[in-house]
Image (cartoon, rainbow over all chains, first blue to last red; front, side):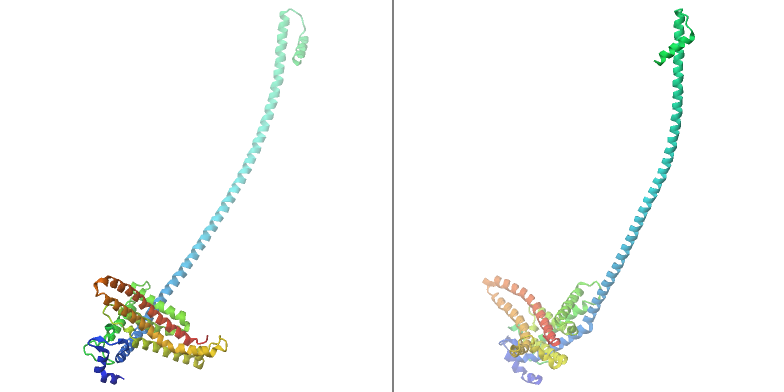
Length: 184
Length: 235
């Protein structure tokens, strides 16, 4: 094949190209086929070697590395998120504990204060009762005293009036009359 | 159609099989571009990639996922071969879009070799993996028994047409795009319709950018589909 085209080289070149222009379709010029096929095979083999020996393993490793990095980062992020939610739960728990503790303390204080207030109230009530009883006794005393004083004054006034009128009346009669009037 | 002529790089007009030609030049540029992207671009091995590295990773992930999705988990070990084909076609197509360049993938000789290589390796792989039961690929057990021989004939024909359609699809697309641009460029010489022609060239060029990628993608994904048939021939 190769020797054939070599032998017919000069004549075949003119059969496909005349005066620098193509005759018919250059794609169908059989004389050029061996050349094109040879260089195509060379090219494809070179490209295949470049790709399979250098380029594709390199890109594959880069892609794998990137995938690994992304997976690791996502895992790390997941872990951190878990930690954060744990911390949040702990914080919530502490907050709830503090709240119940505060409520408990408040209730205790309230109960204590209530007890104190009750005690003080009772004491004050007792005092007030004692004082008011005393006052009532005094008031009753004063009232009887006042009644006596009124009788005395009325007796004196009546005696004076009787003496001015020169009527001789016994003291006991006067006081009896006054008693009657005061009661009336 | 002069843009498709294969010329020796260093003078002379005899194209031996070993002659360094413009095919050699543009294939070498494709190799350089692929190395620049996939090797030089990833030299940092950075976990947070640079722009070039992320494009290389994108290409890797794109093809890897395609192989995994279409051919299955056990197809992944053939991923470097499919990656090779995909990157070569993508870069050859895009380099071909540079004005005055030579589009290696517009030649049926190039695409047919790739398609035949895929066809042969997939067929051999099927027989190596499954022995004679690989032929069950053509015997559709879910169809009614009467239909099965007819379907088997259709399946066999379509199986052997695969490399043809596989190669002509790519070469035809690339050649057609360049030819259309060439036709509009010829109209550009006429002053009256030159603006229209330039607009049309721009539009077609944009389309070609799309086609360049899509054809590489189609070639790669069909390779995956054929690979899947070889790995799992049972319907």
